[in-house]
Image 1: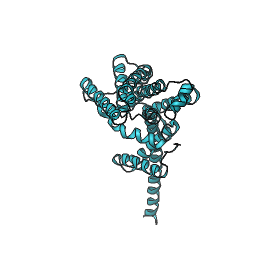
Image 2: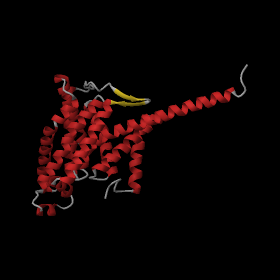
Image 3: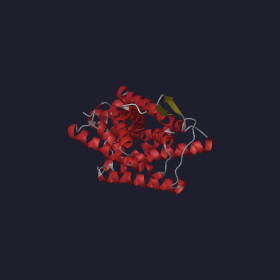
Image 4: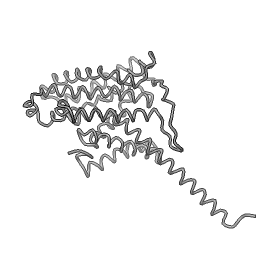
Length: 309
């Protein structure tokens, strides 16, 4: 014989289960967003230097990130070297590549005062050339790497931490901390922070502004080696994947405050969390719209960005 009030008890139990599952889903989405934000910070830090400090609109930055991904793929598939180790070893090569690109940019555009529209076209051309070159060499098939941690996770109760996201997140935080120390504690780093503000004062301190800019831009491109390795660890890549990050990296740079690495990290984490929660509860198609909506709202109330001056 049915017990009185049994349907109400069942409803309360079902409601409790739904609430429990919703809380677990929310916490996992929150953690996934923070891990994703750490990766976004690694991709954006170079833009924070080139655009935020030097005022160079390098829209080809994601193309250098994809180049880093393919170098990690080549070394991993042929020699079995861990992709992140490859990214670290490739840092000097990307640094010198960045120095060479800046020298061409300076000689052709900045020196002549034509670094606005024509300089932008220069970087757009680099983006196009890099993408087409990668397509001609590797085709449009997705490429991926093998590492012992790619399919592994750490589980703490209902909390899931995929190592393919956790390791890039930790490495991103470490890299940002070291870069921030370099910019704030060394003469060259402080000169980089000052070069866009007062070149004459910098010359009075016996520093060559063009040399300082070349170092800064080379650093911005060097970060692409690691960011590219992180990207191919997180997901398979193909040459046009970089387009997805063009708007996102500039949005994070502006949202955090131009030239502020701590602001870049905070903005990247915030955007990653917002995108993850939106994708989890409302669908992936809404995530970019909500993320850029957050950017517009922030700029409406704080035009300088979160940590901008």
